[in-house]
Image 1 (cartoon, helix red, strand yellow):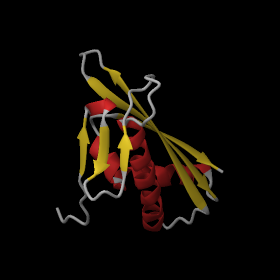
Image 2 (cartoon, one colour):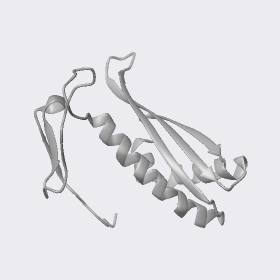
Image 3 (cartoon, one colour):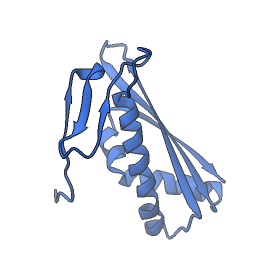
Image 4 (tube, one colour):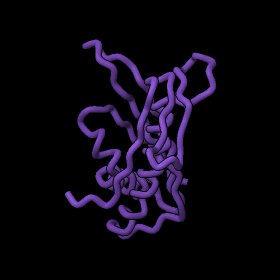
Length: 136
């Protein structure tokens, strides 16, 4: 694989500690959900990255499909839970609004972007990801 970009982050203290990019440009105090401690959690950080990555895959897919949406917005819900086998796993819902296309074309666009997006490719086959498409 040809690598276009690579970054590195370090976490200390687990879910109640701190995580930061090694270049010092961004960092977060972490807090367990429901702990009433100020901070964010890994699921929130994953949702931010996935939303940005997926929304960027949409114009790439649109070009391949020769579609011209007027705009897009991607929201990602990331949950964490325990499977019947007792292991922890993520659960993801992608909500995508596509402006200026009929529903069928919007659906086709989102499905194509789901094949392109690196986050979608990383989760495929091991995380439940549901696509919700709205043509607006």
